[in-house]
Image (tube, rainbow, N blue to C red; front, top):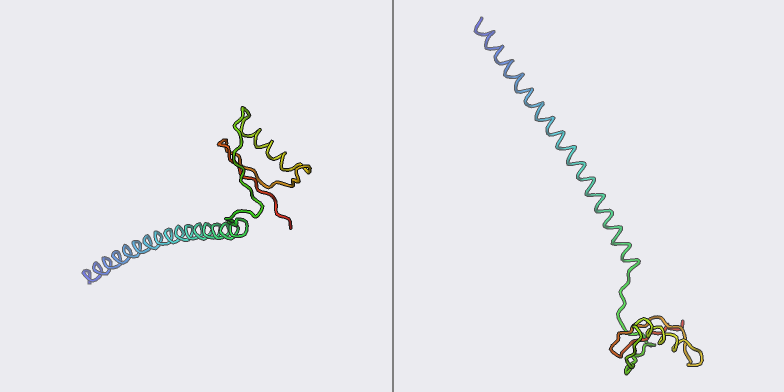
Length: 124
């Protein structure tokens, strides 16, 4: 009978140890699960932010490539001592003057190589 009690105690101790090991594993698994859930939330937030940015960029950024119907290329502009910005301003003033049959200018790009583009606003 003593052997039976000792064997039972050993079995109980072994079962208690295995139970403690399982509880520790469960605790570690729960911690890993919480970490994984937090990472998943971060990834979902990041994905939502990217999707919003993509939608906004589709709405606000439109690519246009082409030459306006009211664009002219000026060539043969004499080199002057003026800086590029001053020459660009003089060209803009010239094309805006009513006496030159001018109008609103959308854009001027002057590069000091004697060539410039003038883009006029289109009438709507």
